[in-house]
Image (cartoon, one colour):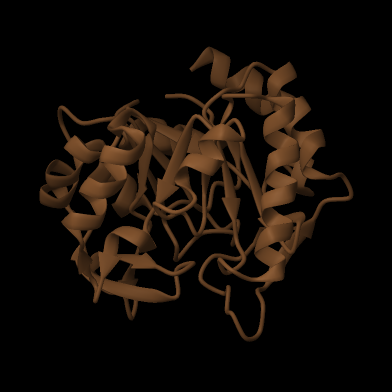
Length: 261
């Protein structure tokens, strides 16, 4: 179980938003906007020896704001070459660019789904282009109307797919990716605790690739819950609750705790 740092970028600024509220027309409910630019966090994570972090571009691909996100992400990656994976609007048209800017992996969701289903032609095209070892599949999910099964969501968590997040899906996609990144969208950014049911599901998966869980971690007790329910197999990322993002969890104390787990 490892800590994976994050840099979420919206309108070129490092932010923490409430998961599921991001809307192309109305923006997003924001928990925190950093005074520092993205390069500050790149230097911080490098100094703490925290590779494998995630940079997520939150604006829509093709917009002026998205280009600002790319600029900020590039500044962070210059400070920590190879230390970050990058996602948000990734396609076969720009994946090689992000790797050339210093990303270790590209993170994809929307590009590999079409009409709500997995587009294996696109997935194979991406893997052929950059190599499986440079691909992270973002299988972030939520329940429809808060009940039943988890479904993978795309387009900055605005659209449900018809694909369930289940053991069978995890098994079927692992040959196309080096890792999975999975946000519990219903709890993301709310600082009200983790999605225990989702973590239990992920922890029950055997013989898989590395998985990072994100969503709702708001206390040191939540970290212990992920460790227990995830059977010490699930990596974590923490956003709004950390002191570096305006939260109550001291960043250095969190790192010390992770070293002892």
